[in-house]
Amino acid sequence: MTPALERAYANPSRRYHSRRHIDDCLTKLDAWPGLTPDERRVLGWAIWWHDAIYDARASDNEARSADLARADLPALGATPAEVDEVARLILLTAGHQVPDGDRLGAVLVSIDLSILASEPAAYDAYARAVREEYAHVPDELWRPGRARVLQHFLDAPVIFADPAFRAAHEAQARANLAREIASLR
Image 1 (cartoon, rainbow, N blue to C red):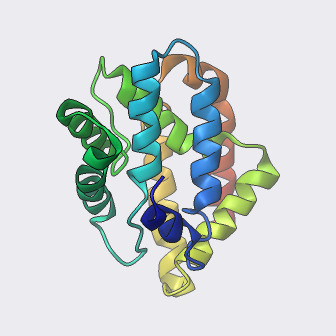
Image 2 (image 1 turned 135 degrees about the vertical axis):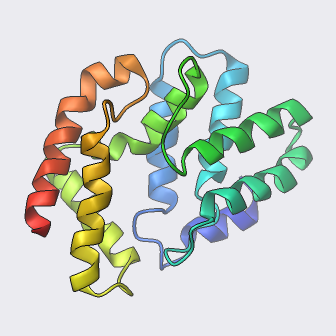
């Protein structure tokens, strides 16, 4: 972790995409079975940098975060191949779509979306925090826009790309998403 990352995640405008989100993702990574030390290192870097740039008004946060990782990671000892892989993984978090057979992508995207499968009270806190990050959007635009985003997840054949994570958590995520959509209507 660099001082710049620490400052970015400590920004008070971040209500969900904060250090707490990163810590939660890192905890899930620590518990993830079957990863080599090299895979854990690459995934850890991807987690740290995936939301490094976060502006609720921008649409290029992941691309800018990947660029920042490309700039920062060599000084932390990352090889060029590791830097490329971290950047690739970060870019997957833009749309949360993972190609078949992309094991590390499936792990990262599943971890990033894992809040969707939390207990209802934690999910509701997440939803409130995201709304606070988008406080600049008036309610009459927020409600249908947020409902469309959530419906996109519900309409997808799967939410969690990792099969084992999906088996354990998909039903809870779908229930949370449906409940939030109903509250927005």
